[in-house]
Length: 429
Image (cartoon, rainbow, N blue to C red; front, top):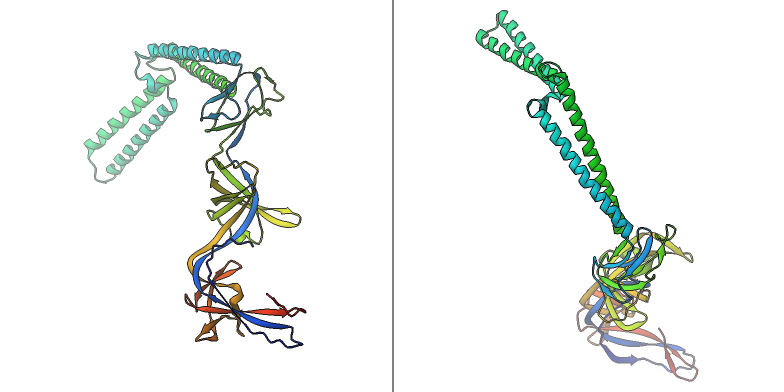
């Protein structure tokens, strides 16, 4: 785990060295005194990778043809929807025109068929329901059921149940009228009864003509949509605002059915948006979350420091030389004239935790007692005393003190000193 830290620790620079120059003594200890101050500490993991352009499109034509227009050059800025290149669309435009004429003709045929049907049915307004046989059958069944129910009610009355004879007769009369009307509609729908049979079949033929005209219109519209789609495939429009990164063809080049789909015509990028695609060790990945802050340094631009955030964590691992890694994506804003380029190597320190204005001590000052509790040696009235402390986060160099010490306290760090053969002393870790 690599850490990035901002820490302010004031060293007193006062060393009390206890040295005994005995002939056979080879090591002693010295005491280093450090005043406890407040500072900032950051806990992070490091990911390494390369910069990339998420808005990078390789644009192609969707059909065959001859390139007649290239409207841009490398380095040109473009806006979304701007026409960048086109094929010869003469034949495609003719196809669209033909399809459009077919649609208009089909619309007129449908209108004519509808008019003919209206002329036949106008004298017979009831024909709007007479041709709906299922509904007529349902109406007959409903009327019959109503008559049966009324008759059953009348039978109950004759057996002594209270009833109103006048009301019963009226119900039967209305039920019979409904049945007669429903049967009349059904008979008309079948070409029988009061409607002449020849009239029915004439009207039915007109209805079929209307349906065929409607089908023909739908087919013509479908052909027109296809023709317009093919025409759109012969024109390349900018899918977003950006800069032309490459133009790979020239006017007059021909695209065949073998290569039109694989030939990149223009490359378009948005240089204002970049990402760092990096890798993290399996040990570090559990602590990384989306939207965590990241500090990015680019190898080729050492004075540039960028701030971004984690935007994606790939749940699928990769293996490199026996090491399990996970890919993460870090997004960031690109400063103007920064000199950043796609593919540049970069390192990101992903911040997992950070504290500001907390008490800090060097890790070397922390020891552990017999119960494995953290303790720190502190100068109190010119005497060294051992104090229990509560620890917070550590960046590998310094540790946050949550409780047990106060700002301005002086901790004692004992350092081993080794005597050199020459009589000089060497500081040990």
